[in-house]
Image 1 (tube, rainbow, N blue to C red):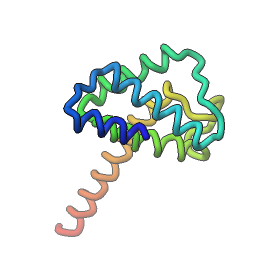
Image 2 (image 1 turned 60 degrees about the horizontal axis):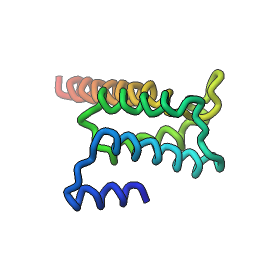
Image 3 (image 1 turned 120 degrees about the vertical axis):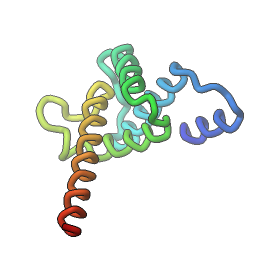
Image 4 (image 1 turned 135 degrees about the vertical axis):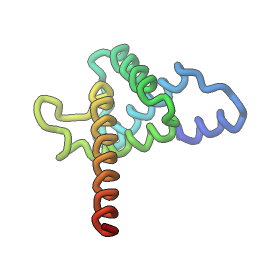
Length: 123
């Protein structure tokens, strides 16, 4: 629903401000959390979560909002068994920044490994 709402705004040529983008991402995270865990996401500090989304958006400003939705799907759906160690048993917006950097690092390592495999094949 949020993806379609965002697509509609873009098609209408409406400006997607940073505040709107943060709102879309936060609402999407809450909806995905509810879908996966069957309960509402209750941030300890809503403003801290909203601020964290702002930091993420400034760090990854070239990333489209729809791509953030894909990352949130991956993060929330895969949280159990991968990131639920320690004191955080469920995903949070605050932890999302760490997860994105971890995903980027993994992709870079995979790309580097692929290049090494190709080099070894041709040499």
